[in-house]
Length: 369
Image (cartoon, rainbow, N blue to C red):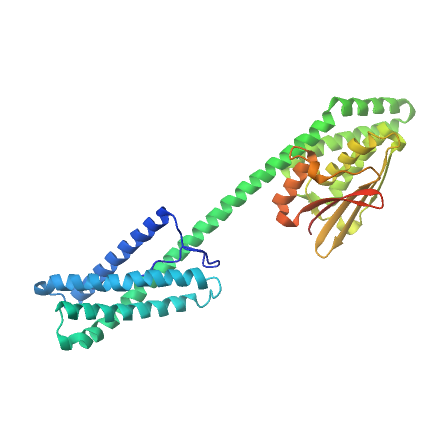
């Protein structure tokens, strides 16, 4: 005859304080008391103890017992659930049963005393009433209490699982949206007239003097555009595939900037199969090309490194430019999009940081392996 835990059995919380929660608690109390009263009367009827001549007293007695047992059971079981279900999950059912037995015993003692005061039972019949009613009260209380507790616990777990599933679906949809934005941003930069025309002009200039390199550049441009279009189909891609796109992008830009782009990729082959967000590393490299190489006559030297340390992957893009601060990055910026994607994919474990080391700018992306 208890109010089942309304907090997760794995994480105690404070009782609800909203009017809706109190209304729900009141409805459960009414249902529990009514059910217990009906069960007691049916039990008396089946045992032949229900008599029409004493029906009013018996109905009143069943109701009083139900109130005195059900309401304390609801309160104490609910209190136990909030505070101990998460700490002692294997003992919680035994704790519920002990509480129900205690409230049933206390309810019978209090109810018999009330009946004696009301003159329903004789002065010498107090303990006779207690002995005859207590076994029935304990059985009924345990039956209703544990059954209802089990039902409500399973119902809550189902609701919690459904809520978690819907939350994950929303987060996944948001992650896909951010990935699509990154993909569209990347594709937009590829087909931007300046980038596309400069690349095509570079290819045209290479055809007479170096047709092999011109053909290779066309292939890299096609690969880059294809990857940008297909990036939204995968939440994560192998690092080896991401590095190929980075190389293709740098080689395409190298046909335009020539010696102004100097780059080195020092990522160990052992990280080739590591899964990374698509276009993540490429976004960091593109940021360097746009804001350092393109704006300085001397260009920039770009280093791309990777390491696996203590269960985390660290990827770095290092350049000899003046540096920048992530605080100045807006959510609409490519790096702002990347930060949001890392947070969705890895939570607090996904990080992007910018530091200055040895007069160089180090953009470090790290996440769990």
